[in-house]
Structure formats: C-alpha cells, structure tokens
Amino acid sequence: MNLNPIKVSVVVLAYNHEPFLRQALDGVLGQLVDFDYEVIVGEDCSTDQTRRIVRDYEQRYPALLKPIYHPHNVGMGANFHACLQACQGQYIALLEGDDYWTSPLKLQRQVAWLDQHPDFTICFHPVLDHYEDGSRPDAAPHRFKQDVYTFDDFLTPIYTIVSTSATMLRNVRPTWPAWLFTVKPIDFSLVLLYTELGKAKLLPEVMSAYRIHAGGIWSGTPRYLNIKSFLLMYRQLWLHYAATSHGPKLRRHLFDLYLTTANVYANSGLPAEARDLLREALRLEPARYLTDVPALLGAGLRLARSLARHQRAPGRAVAGQVYPLA
Image 1 (cartoon, rainbow, N blue to C red):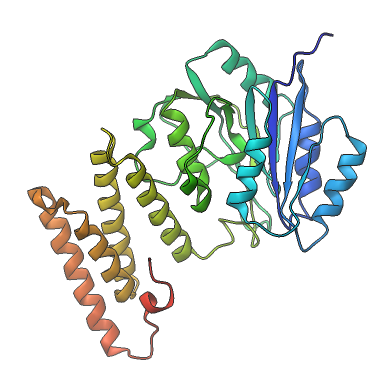
Image 2: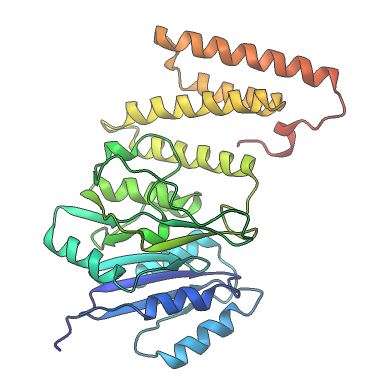
C-alpha cells in the first residue's frame, strides 16, 4: 500500500496523566488508516510517572511518536502552542492525556470528510462523558441541532460543544494570537478562530470519551473558578474582534454573560463577586438599549438582596476579596 506524506498530526497534551495516558496513546496508535500520521506528545514536566510512560512509547514506536519534553512546567497553553508549532500534517487531531478515543476509525473518517470538503476547517463528533468514579453512567449529553456550523453559530457564550478529543483541524493557520494560549478554555476560542476561515462539520458517531475526574483541568476545578476563566476568555475574544463586524455581537453576548453570572453569584450569597460582574457589564455600555433596563434592574435588585443577607451573616467570606475577576 502506498502511503501519503504525513496526513495527520495528532497532538496529545500530557501532564500528571499517569493513570490514563496508556489508554489515550493506545487509542491513537491503534487507528486503522491508509495514510501516514505522527503523534506529537507534549509532556509538561509531570510530577508523576507520565514522562516515563511517554519514553516507553517513544522507544516502542520511534517512527510515530515525536515527544516534546519540557525541562520545566510551562502550563497547558504554552505546551499546546509548542505542539501546534511542531505539527507537519495536513490536519491536526487533538487529545488530552486523560481522555481517549473509542473508535479505531476516527482519524480515517474525519480525514475522508475534510479531504472531500475543502471549504471546511473543522471536523468533530459527539463525545461520551465518562465519570471515573462511577457516580454516573457513561453518556453523550450534548444534543446537536445541526451538522454544519459557522462562525456565527459558535459566538453564543455557552460551554463549547466541540470537545478537544473530538476535534480535527485543517492545518491552515500560520500564526496564532498570543492571548489564545493564556485563556481557559482554549478550545472555545480555537473553534471560533478556525470557523473564521471555514465551516465545521459534525459527524454523527461518538468516537471519543471525556474523562471526568478530580484531577481534570476543567472538571476538577471549582465551578466559580471555571466561571471566572470563561468570562476572561470571552472578554479576550471580544477584544480580538472588537474592531470587526463581529465586535457588536460579541460585546452583546459578553454583556449577557456578565449579567447572568452576576445573578448566579447574587443568588448564591456572593454579593462582592456579583457587584464586580455587574460593574463589568455596565462598562460595556449596552444600557442605551431599552430592552436592557429590566435585566439590569433585576440584577441590581438581586444584588441588593444578597448584600442585605450578607450583612446579616457577617461571618461569611467576601468572594470578591478571595478571587477577584481582574
């Protein structure tokens, strides 16, 4: 069989993934394909035996594995950036070391679609949520309304429906904005940047699993910190596109996101955090629209009630002093 030049670069991000990494790498190396691919493993100076596992696989698969061993911990963003820069494939498939692929035909099917549709820059699929502690049965929770998505479809500030382990990108973006590798989650911004260049295709079959466990970079982080991270990430997106035709829509979504989160914090008895969020919303100056007045008044009322409850319970922590937004 004649194999093509490197068709796909598989990026595996590994940090303290000792219990999971072998399953992740086995799923990548067990792909049934009719093309060449490479596996870029970014090992971010783990404190467990993750690096030893990567070296073991490197010795067993020297033609496929191309590890990047960071001499010190650089963080997920810098690790991801280094891996992207090392990719030589026509397409880039993504995987975090604690997740895994469930189909040996994943790469073949995604490549087949992108080969036949040059106007698409992303191909993805549904993902199984796997609870490592067994507290819930495995399930694919996202319900997709369509199978083709554009830039505008991904503007709405909801948790990204394109999971990292499901994503294959066309390797067409020569430069990246520096802020991309400082935000969390990176994948939401990545999808927007790519759908600026082409459409995204959803394949129907579940072909990977997202592992939910205490050490997960998202699932293992307290919810209030994830909310803060998402807000800061979305603000960077707005600043990136502020001078373009996308700016007003992103600004509007950011206002809604600030306001919704302010309501959540106020109702949760965190008035200081709610006040900061409401101030951020007002700084965007969308209140010139009459439709915003009831929402702003409602948020202000909930904040006042939260402050009153907080004053009656002085022993409670002031959230804004513990984890401010800026």
